[in-house]
Length: 583
Image (cartoon, rainbow, N blue to C red; front, side, top):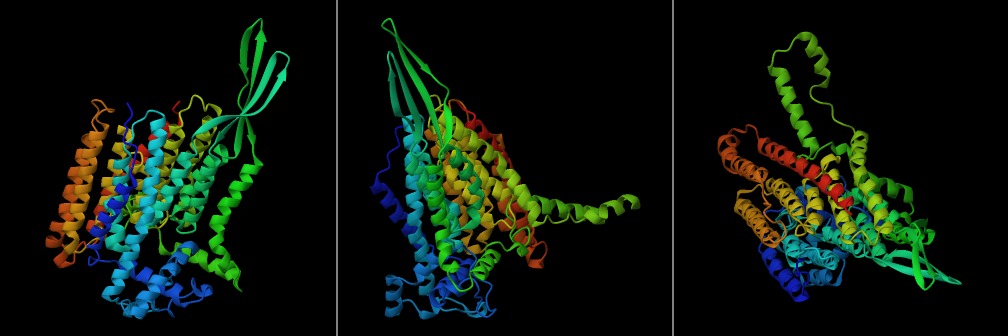
């Protein structure tokens, strides 16, 4: 039987926000990364400079913290620096003018109130995360409830808003990931709402004893328009989500822009009625396509217009592209993200070590030597691999868009909804595993949408748990100071333990004798526990004092989690395909 826990009272949402905000307030004095300086400088840029200088300024070469997010995020920073509350804080003297000044990196130490001000902006921006989590969890709950499928809305919501990865990234390390993932969840919620179909009678023609009806299969078009427009606005805030665009394009192009029609003939013979139905026929709707294109492009291109209207529009766009796509930074970040390229570079280093230490015949050595260390893939090669990795999501998005219209009376509406989320998770995985200069935080783009499906089945719950314990563990080295050791371990272990226990309890009625955790998971837990012991105890005592192997803990973390996440990526692709082919 389906779970009835689909309601989510607003009072509980508000209370949860207040409790979590209070806990986040306690994290204000904790370590902050240079990302804090980045966003402080962006506030200064948008506060003091004309819009035409936003993407050009570098404080006369005195800072590396230049603006490198799309325009809509720049306007968000401008709003934070120029509003009634900020102006009041400046006039009262609580917030010092230096907090919003253009400062060189050698002299940009913030005051205590400046830190509080920035921390508060992140806490308040989490309102968007809560709205997105509420809409996504309740939308999925409604679709599944209508199809008599299990879903626990409250648990789904809580797993999203309490995710330790977001707490560590945003409220310790300092970023605005929660806000942008909240926008993504709002977009996904709209797409979910648009998966319900209905047959509408277009026209009825009566001929003697025969009646011909023409019916059109329609989805909730406004919901899908809202989902597309919201995603377009998200792209204008952070280009990291560009890899989800093919999924949206192929799904909406087929599901939204095509109309499925069929004719039904009712004939009467000797007081006996016969009904004959024709095959469903597809017609491309230019009207729907144009409306979808206008709504999407308006939300995406709108924030670019003020820059295009400057006296040097070509230079503005060129400079913006250079900032948004800095290919000169190299294949990987200084902190290796746990992806394929971390495994590639690790294998290269092992091969180089073996090549230098092991005696190899001269003729073989001369053949191997040009490839040791391994050559670094160019941005073009990486882009090709990434696009190839996104192809399965495109193919099955088109197929699900077709089947959901063609067999709407046979295909439950929860299948397109579940597929779209699995498609988003797979696409995010592909971007994380194959992307150029990927940051470790990008794994959250897979974890958060996957949370929406965590209570729907044992398979989804297991994938969610595995992606979480590998993905969030890979974030732990970001909090490298001793003072944060207990905090990060407590957040990680407490949330993961609670998630496993609650999912076991919620799914106990539907999974039968099947275990949520398998031998693979217990081996992974043991491996990660040993790795944590090495990172935080053995390495600082044995290796760090002598300055040896300083990069070893980071490399070990990236490689171990990279192997685990590659397994999750493959598992994600299988679940996506199985979901897409369900009937």
